[in-house]
Image 1 (cartoon, rainbow, N blue to C red):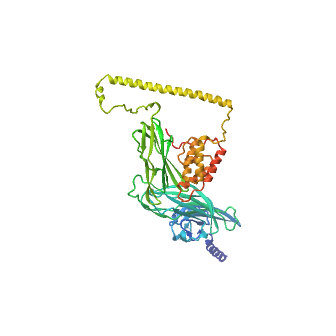
Image 2: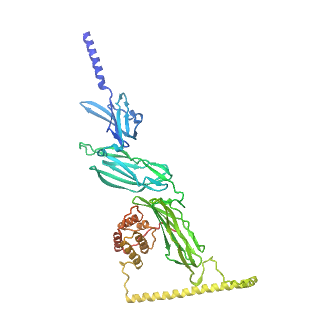
Image 3: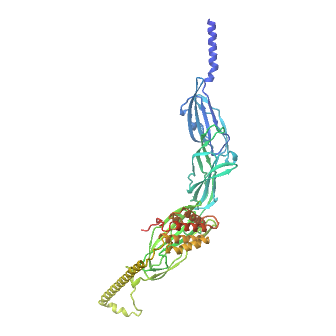
Length: 571
């Protein structure tokens, strides 16, 4: 009996020893693909067959050669044949910052340890096209630029999977100003028989210092829904993804030493002027508004120079602060500055306003150019009755022989002369107002007679569907310019037509388009502006379409008032 008991004990001991490994904790580690591509995310999965707390595994402790984007933990329990099994799974999103051979070391979790994993990281150019599910392409319109010259940086994100969410951003670059130009554009492309969703974004890159500069790649981080190859799951699985474009080196050239004035590198600069009233002759004391509009392509509004304007001493000058605005047309920045000056003539005569010129550097031809306004001669007339504005110096008659020198020594004659001059001026002023009152009464009587005559004749009111008389001339000029497909003449005619139609002045086509309710006409105006300031050399051939939209606007809304809020209010 004792012998049997001893044998049973030995048997149970051996059974315990040989069965112990089957109950030991186990852990595994794997990656979702190998090799991987630099800057693209891949997933490391670490699994333990025990129910463990979340902090039982820390990726930061074990992972050194890869960027850690995030970790998710999932615990589960299952029962099979009354046997309960538990597991804990960590999914870590990793990104390889450069190509090469790397190793994920053995990871210890509890009492278990995983096997090390060798990872091969390929350069983006080494990846087979059919294996790319998402990637980024980035390009600059030029690999060299002048300091403060704006370059267009175009980024295209290609995604073949179903994109759930994501972010696309350019990091901060030292001594470089970065701004997004316009809105993102979405499209589709077929590449090697696969359909990709394409998101296109333009950035304006403006270097502030000369020398060699590196534009780092754009980074994309997001999540995609990846459908299983078996097709049994209708929802698929959401996975993190990441991609990055290649760096681009640019050479930034300094400002030429011979350039005069404020440095302005651009593809095109123009200057124009507007007068209110639009005339070449003015009257003493009547205010005049002069606006100078400077437009430049590929610059920021703060880069536009201030204008140093000179005027004759006989004209009083009241300058207003310059107003600026910016817009984006076909991926190019368009900057405008409006300089408004109030002028009040103080003396009669002919006066010459000097020419205005703005120096700028043509980035296409690499040479200096000037945006110019020619000198302008204006005629200032005396007001009716010869009245002068207050504070204006009056020239008294005198001869060249000096005969009045003895009279000036008297103390009584000057007082008498002043009294006589005062009475004479008062009589002139009284005569002027009497004459004006008589004219007003006569016109008032004639107006009443005309109204009575019209009522008796039963004259019909003008047809509200007709074009107003003041609009007909600029409308005809617009028609001729559109038929000739002349973009510059069409722009001038559009501004004149808009002012005649609304009574308001639009400072450029961008502001004019804002005041129109016709969407199609706005689009045609944008095409016109792109032809004027764009970087393509194609001729503008949309005059017929623009004229058709203008005609349609008059037919649909003949009496509509297209209000345009003043972009540059004057106090």
